[in-house]
Amino acid sequence: GNSVTQMEGPVTLSEEAFLTINCTYTATGYPSLFWYVQYPGEGLQLLLKATKADDKGSNKGFEATYRKETTSFHLEKGSVQVSDSAVYFCALTDSGSARQLTFGSGTQLTVLP
Amino acid sequence: KAGVTQTPRYLIKTRGQQVTLSCSPISGHRSVSWYQQTPGQGLQFLFEYFSETQRNKGNFPGRFSGRQFSNSRSEMNVSTLELGDSALYLCASSRTRQGGSYNEQFFGPGTRLTVL
Image 1 (tube, each protein chain N blue to C red):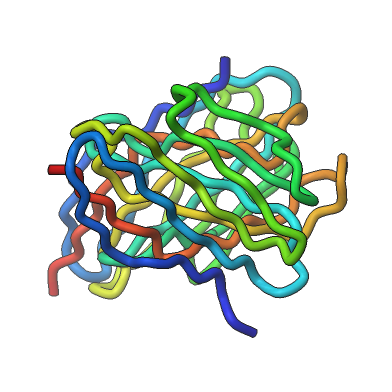
Image 2: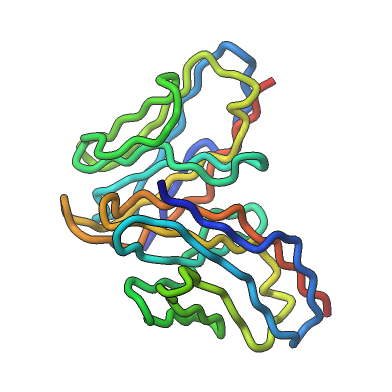
């Protein structure tokens, strides 16, 4: 079956530091890959997505590249802000069940001023 | 444009009771999916409805059920509540045609269910 493995948290960084959150996946077929963010007391928001190999998703300074050869979709940001503090989830849908998201365990990010 | 709304936001029930949660999708969205979020199991897919039909179901016992109405609003029901059902239940809607490829899922704020 499908699975997503995410870097264990929590992660604590100083403002303006570089962020990487690792994500690897196992899936049949050609999955689409996503990063979602969850702020305290809120639902999930789609941060970025990539639907085929070598695609780069980007949004709000965050980037992730779909690497089929390493089955990875690592999230990066060059300079984090306090407002980026949240829980980040890597997720996938496979080609057979397009609207069933399989999530990683989530990574809590705290950015200190 | 209004987002996905879920009611109620918080619920407290006791073991053995049943509960119904409601989700109103974004206008024009016909697909509604439900997810359970717990600290131990993370985010798990419950089921998806499209045009009043369940199209996909996750690995949950039959105590968990749902339905969708003609206006795309959806409800999920949990019968004979157990302590382990305490969770945040998230609903997501998407604009997708039947059998179509992925369209972005928009999540609601969730309903926090506590079972005592």
